[in-house]
Length: 93
Image (tube, rainbow, N blue to C red; front, side):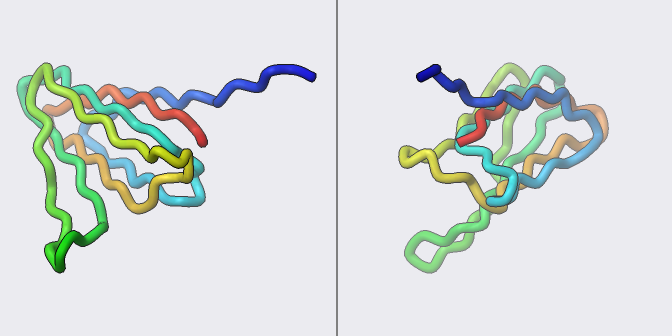
């Protein structure tokens, strides 16, 4: 009986966006901004009737989003506008 590890996804995202959907199987994602121009992360959930909005990620700051259960994330949009570089590391559930 062997030990099985989770696959890791890595990507430098520049002048582009990435949408993580449930079918991708990502359970944890970390986003680090390495440029002067910041990026955003936007979820799709609601809390007390308030819809999600874009969260800014400024230079040398990071955001980590994951599930305690290990179930996959759904509809998380990571955006690196012109001049922005976001370093993404994600773990499959």
